[in-house]
Image (tube, rainbow, N blue to C red; front, side, top):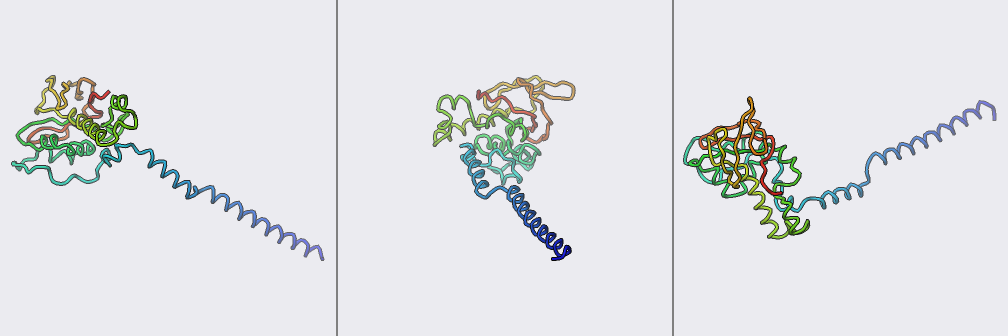
Length: 233
């Protein structure tokens, strides 16, 4: 064999070997880039198992709604807008707005044009940032245990009572609500508000009011940057 043929043969062998190694490396990199299907399924199952009990009992209740709720609970006598008209349409508070509709006494109160009310609606981000869900009460966990606190019909009833209290703690049965005037919420806690410059703060707690978003026939909607202390531990 001439030197030229030998060199060509060596080059061909080297080229084939290089191509094989490159293909093997590419396959390995491709495999590392994507998790195995079984691992994806495992992650999904783990996520599902870690859903809270109340997420299943009250699905989506603390998720912002993309569309406004349907017609109000009761027909209104006046053609003028009232709280139940504007609350679901107020930007950034639709989590709280939906919660008000989940309890008939609250929904009826907001839909009553003859009774004035000031709604202290926490922003979506404030509710989502809570260290626990609005229906969770540390005392329930102490008394009934982590597993049984909100399990079964009794547990669901406890959760709903806690959630209703959370909503009612943000409802002032007065409008206009004057500066320094102490008024009991529907949950029974006394609140007042103060003003520092252009900013309004709810006391106690020094909760900042982001804006007075709506003023209608039977009250006002105030948007809060935090939640009112609803006395659940």
